[in-house]
Length: 294
Image (spheres, rainbow, N blue to C red):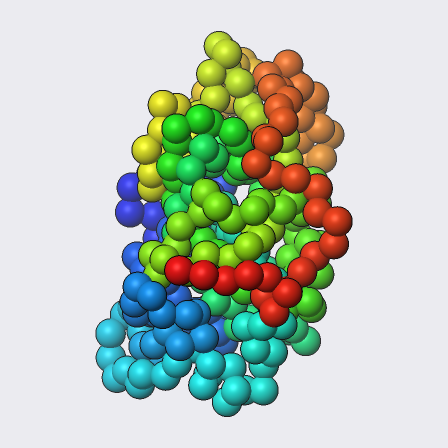
């Protein structure tokens, strides 16, 4: 089982215990299969933030050390003729979409799309990242954003171009995009955007009338934190599965009828909710149509 010190090169597709997956210790860009550290300078617009860019081959990129070149976000976008920040959508990532190995997997599904993604660390109030009441095809219990008054949880604000957004939508089957007015979201750089978007699915897993948050994800909350591996063990116990843990996961991943059987079982632990901070958007807006301030 994986709990602390999850290997950065593994994604939930490799092992469901990995979910939501390890993420870098600072804001970063993901590009050409590697992460490069962004210096989180307060009061600095995202375009002007400095990237420590490295040709190092591992997923960690400049986080792994080696020779580093400093570039701004704007200069790197211009260098590769990518869309500027102004033409991108501010999209909140909170589950596996900041796991480097998961990003590598998702962008491998369509090599025609640029994998250049900007990920800025931040936090949001009165929202927590809790376990949803369904299973991903690879056997993990996925993350959802849920209303928890007084909570403050880590999130990441990414900036995706329209093609990337369409591609990400295709990998987030059960979720829909919702909009937040941004007032409760704080980036490490202290920049604020009038609106931000996120994937939303209003069904939490509730056991004994309690929700559970992810131990991997920083923040403070009245909700108990628990590892994915521990949640899967709880599920095995609730189902009363008689085989080994490994057999349970194998059947989830390779036997569609068994996955559907467990999904049906989870309906009895489904807690539907309405999050008042996340609304249905009238239309998606890019950064150039949004107010920005510090």
